[in-house]
Image (cartoon, rainbow, N blue to C red):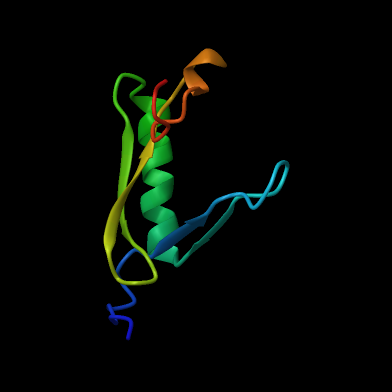
Length: 85
């Protein structure tokens, strides 16, 4: 059974792509979108630090969304969770 949190808590779920050229889907309540928007603005305004949003997923577990500003295509790779070979 899923835990129930008050609706004032920031809920966000970010669904990854199902395949190449497929959309990434973000589902969130108003509070979740505001926290995410603040993380985006922080990353833009303060380029030397990351924007961070602490939000809850559908299972009522807290996680961080980190927004990092990059300047080049090379900075986009590798993915932070890929193992280095």
